[in-house]
Amino acid sequence: KNEVEQSPQNLTAQEGEFITINCSYSVGISALHWLQQHPGGGIVSLFMLSSGKKKHGRLIATINIQEKHSSLHITASHPRDSAVYICAVTNYGQNFVFGPGTRLSVLP
Amino acid sequence: NAGVTQTPKFQVLKTGQSMTLQCAQDMNHNSMYWYRQDPGMGLRLIYYSASEGTTDKGEVPNGYNVSRLNKREFSLRLESAAPSQTSVYFCASSEYSPSNTGELFFGEGSRLTVL
Image (cartoon, rainbow over all chains, first blue to last red; front, side, top):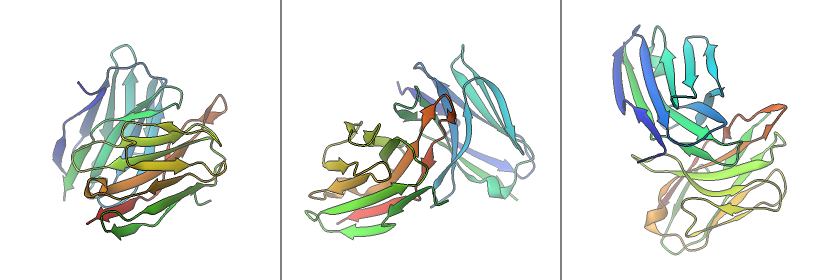
């Protein structure tokens, strides 16, 4: 069993839809990261969470430490949100363990 | 503020050739990482450096060597390239401390093809 799992693997949505991507992990962590990778592009950090909830624009990330689960929500999705979203966990920065990614396509 | 810079962006090698991927960060981070990304797989750690002068093997270190030349630079060397090393390589850095967020910063990636 992988230490970090994501669901769904692939997701296609219509523009404007509310999107949820899930991440569960099985190891102890100090923080969880959500990353975004556009096709053929680099990887950028969206959020770092150790508890609760964070919001940046149309993106919301939540984490439940007791359940070892995090969700990334995108409200009013747009084609430019099409990307691979990657969940990563760390234990005080010693190493990062990455999920396999969720490929999101938002159709106009 | 350039963040993490890695070179080259693209490279084609023949089996048995050697090359070095260069990485530099200007954020004064102690921790630096080399990952490879292959289709259908998550990012996998090749080597990690917690500080200048220290390096540790990651999940897939075979066939690679690294040098943490100073706090800014962390290079990855393929001594004798193999087709199995065809991949996209990412350098990253972070700093975890009471006064730092621990955010992970990535370079743009280096696409390596070994024929």
